[in-house]
Amino acid sequence: MTEPRRREDVDALLHRLVYELSERARERDEARVENQRIKNALRNWQSAEAARRFGP
Image (cartoon, rainbow, N blue to C red; front, side):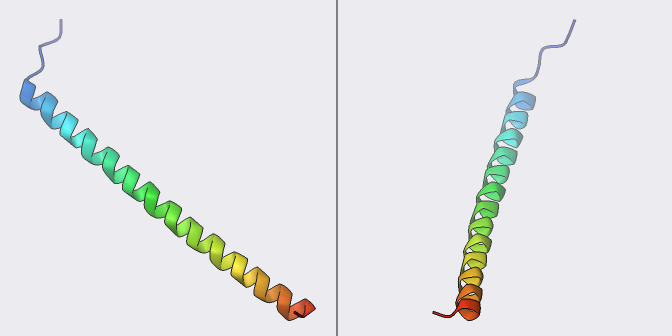
């Protein structure tokens, strides 16, 4: 049979999980912003390269 969990232990675990999930969400959001920045830079480069090669 398992021992009952202490409330302090459960609370500590829940707080840790909330922190870790919020960190993952922050990292995901940062990655999405960086991904969009890279896509925009690539799109701009492709447009500039096409204009250079084929004229305006």
